[in-house]
Length: 247
Image (cartoon, rainbow, N blue to C red; front, side, top):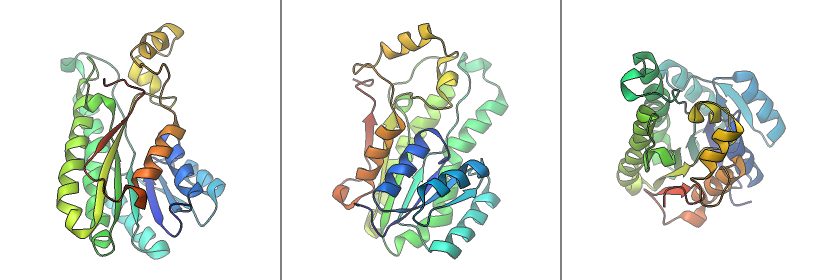
């Protein structure tokens, strides 16, 4: 119960890594707001979590939608202690000049602009009480692979944003870290690989020394530590949770 008495917001929380993080934070005692563009999925997971959890539909790439989320959170739980910026998307693998402008804009809106919008909505309240922000980056932002070009760039942005947020917010007692998973059994896996076939999985797994994908449970365990007081001297870190992929 490392997070007993804490309140946490997890974006993209209805499935994949976000759901794993939400489940672990709740298991450690946090009251969790599950945020997702899929409002029904968010509500379903919140009902599963119990403990005062609630789900909220939100497009975290849209300022008005995030403002409505902030109003709902303030009404039900006040300022959060923990924010997990997990929501993210990718484009299909393609040469960098072939990725459409619409895909580029959407990747940067969801993966990058959302972090700014969440900070704009919640950081002022967190400064008054301290807390932890966790950004879900990717090994793609540290060790880029061809054809995931602009996704790689968006996650590199996430790593730099984490460090600049950490150094600015440190005097207020707000710690900011990132986790960098390798691909996992999430709805984005097929998009990362281009196609989900046994051959493509074997090829991808051959690049991971521990020989398996990241799991939602892996992300939840890392998130719970970094958001807890046990990590009280850790800020500005981009932790690789990748089975050795970036070595």
